[in-house]
Image 1 (cartoon, rainbow, N blue to C red):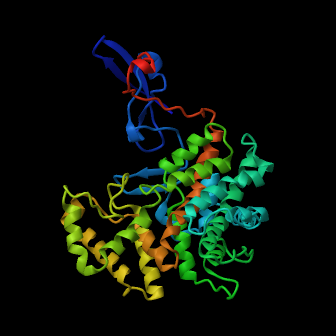
Image 2 (image 1 turned 90 degrees about the vertical axis):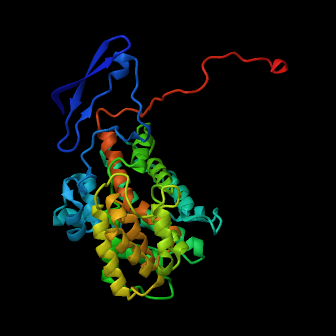
Length: 432
């Protein structure tokens, strides 16, 4: 909404004046509406990385990085992670409210009925090398979904959008598990309707046809919480990518694929895998001190992975929850004496007590703990980003649907500060 305040820009060169309205949301910083800036002044704004730019209005997720607050549709992440299942959070993100018992039963049934993938889709996997990164496979297979489920691709039709949302939430875990099974040469495990969403995924991911699958409720709850904590995080790089792709009118499967590809980057979804790689590099508790010194040396490019966050200047609220989950899993599996886990716990202790880390606000973040938990669950590190994508897919879908429904939506078209050559003429090759 527009409030009564306006900001005034003065061009000192020609003394021209431009007034711009100030918009206020329900909470968080006000924003300056610069939509008419170019028309009024002939100038653009310049904001690499969009660190001070609101690219859209949204009702889905709110973050206060200074206070360490994360809200999904107004609900604190701490309450959702403790009291709700991942599918409840999916319903919330998609519909704006937590479901009633009957709504939840219907939603779970709809998701369960769509967990299978088209049988011909399995042929896609045969085209990949066995040693292909799972994210490469997932990008290809999710992108192909529109070729198999083109009966509901009218993005102007709310029923079609809802069906696409259900299909993506249901099928991405199946595809993620299939990508893992393919890479290790084991047969695909079909979903079972009698299992819960997370139980089903764990069976498809970790079980084989040779043995019965008996889900451990503590481990199931841990993975369910990981998915909740990764379900959405406002206008991050991958979500912004989904919105930008969707602004062109692309089908939802293509848009979510764009988000998955963006998440694949080491600076985004690959951070938890990088944490495990760092722990392997350090190797042992006895080697920690030299690495801590390297991290504190401003002339050394080395940095500890899994510490600090672009948005949070306080303790990431997701990290607090993941820390508790981490210790629950380690206790359940008796892994506190594991070499890498002992190393991780010592790094955690140092970061929470060392004045340098406290002053720089380099607290352990959600990636630090999630990698440890996923490893304890038996999920290989090359699958960590895929797990992130599985949890984040519902956030992408919710933002895509919100954008399509927004009457102010238009195709994304950022501008630039051009620093290349000015106009020049081509010189014939013989004269160059």
